[in-house]
Length: 464
Image (tube, rainbow, N blue to C red; front, side, top):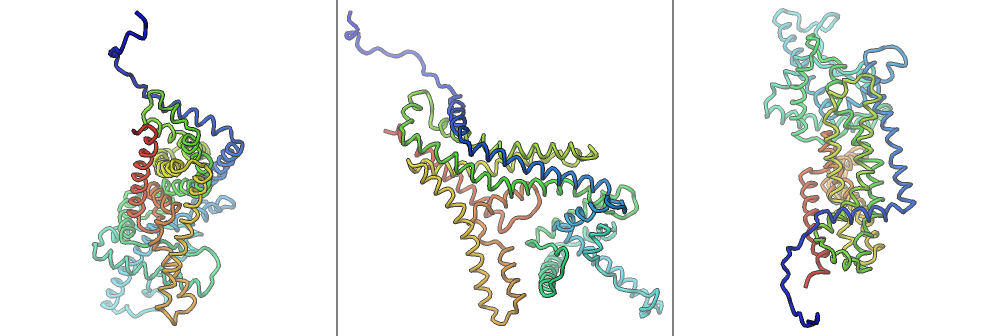
């Protein structure tokens, strides 16, 4: 019988799908992108900050070892560590809140002196109001807390904490205003966005510090305080690594790699080749995402982990591992927070056009225009406030801009600031600008929208 007379016959075999097709797509995309000479140069430059940040971790650990030394040059590191500690919001708040305990003790002693007839004696040996520790004293001697003062903070009720929030916030702004008028030299006072949660966090820190009185002298000395803040100091360095050198490098690398991944397939009709194999649209999307994630892991995750290992190897004491063992997990989470939304958004732009140049332009335009819009809207908000204060002096006018910047109501317009807010939350250093809930909501909304749109655009060539 001729073959053309056989007619239609039923296919009895079940179709099989290879779930590893996305790896083939990812491997091919990585090899093609790595051919770029500029991309390889950027990768080399991205690993240079590791050694600079590693030197910073070495200085911190070496300074902690010599924190009690009064000899030069060992005592130089104490200034550096003291400045880092004092800039922490919870420590700055705790310093001010413990002063109230000292004032309460002074008032009690004063009243007891009135009863005994010595209350009005202000001469030598008399009762005096305790003076708060100055910034110069903190930088020279470090910082310590008495356990009774910490217990005073722990016992404060929520109503008292709310009053403390208002007092500290007003006091901080007033000190900043006076420092601007006097134009004092030296390290400035720590300026950060205050909230009731930050005051509540200072209370939790006071409770934790009570357990760090290892020698039982009822004083949390500077060494014990630094040991408690050791993970936080390391997190500061790692967050700085994610924020400054790596953030700009990530934007550039994604702008070089991602816009070409889907737009060229649409232009060259490569979908016909992909979908002629047992490849699903989700495997295609996963393969393209894996291309970008591979480069981002080489720019953020691996260097940060290498920085952590370098810091451990340079530390004089291996006990630092007991304090910082959880930081690698935070590095992974911070990398996910950075990689997932940026990859989905860049690939969505690539799927919307067949010209990769337009997708690259849209990618960089969103980052640049977002930062500009955030700056402009913050300035407009401050100008509108200034119009209500016609007779404000220059220092008060500057404070209006400072308060508008710390409030960060328009921070969600800037992709850079939004991702920084989320990463600061991951590392637990509380340096976000604006609302953290808004940042998570905007990133989640963008990820969901990009994922749905990307799936629809990729599915279009096989949709009948």
